[in-house]
Image 1 (cartoon, rainbow, N blue to C red):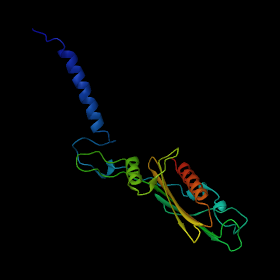
Image 2 (image 1 turned 60 degrees about the vertical axis):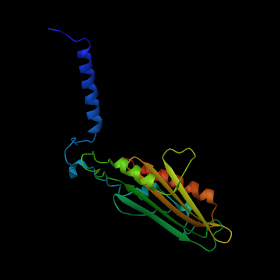
Image 3 (image 1 turned 135 degrees about the vertical axis):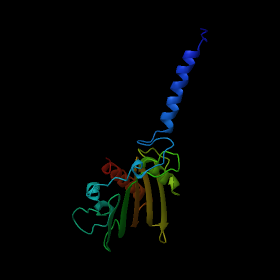
Image 4 (image 1 turned 180 degrees about the vertical axis):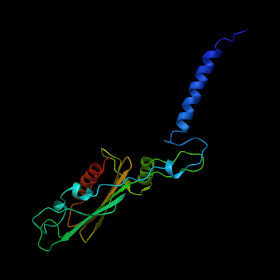
Length: 203
């Protein structure tokens, strides 16, 4: 019997590479290559905590001092939670009016087409974040971040600030409007609030 030098090692190496490629292609949990995707292959969006807005905490510092106590945002929704608060005052030196809305969305997976592993919840959240037309925030941040802000009023004393932050399957959008307010101060507050929402929505 004639033995071909190196044949065994090449066979082993080829088998290993083939297994590695198969593992990458069929990386979806429970998804078999070449098989049609079924609803059970697509991970659903998780329900967010029923007390998420309360966990985010007191937002009184972002609003006119309409009351002496803390202000907890009102919550609605499950996989997408909206937290809202607003107030106005005519004799307040810091702010005369302000509105605040924090939208926290937990994304589920999506069908990626025939023969493809479904998109994971994190991939869907990333795609949503990157499709936003907001400006990428270039300063050091713990999470991918985009911002936009618009001035109004005769002297630009009113600002609408929007921040978008993504971590894993979660995307947080903060919409903050105040009059009067410094733009940088409003933006820092919105970013801090977005980070707090990300933290409190972790699994």
